[in-house]
Image: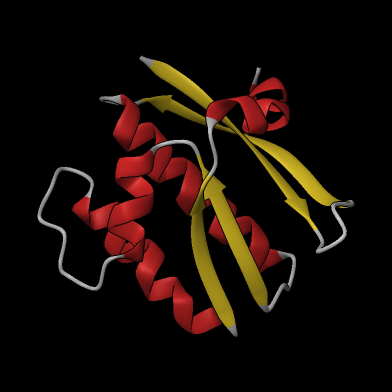
Length: 111
């Protein structure tokens, strides 16, 4: 399956600070797609110079893996490790689950 990810960065008041689509090309499964989306969100936030970032995603499995301190040996383990290494670039980097209905703007941007 081919996928495109929509990334939207908002400030603490909800104002959009940046937005962009990222074409991912062929991905194996929804968890891989969501993990890559999180990685691109973190990279985008890093490139924009943010020190504190909360990444919201609608795949609970990926969010749980990102919050965990244990080594992930799943198919998406390398992506999860890369995201966790990027924590050093931020003052705080956290991950929150957001149901798909509330992430409709990012899905619209991707399409």
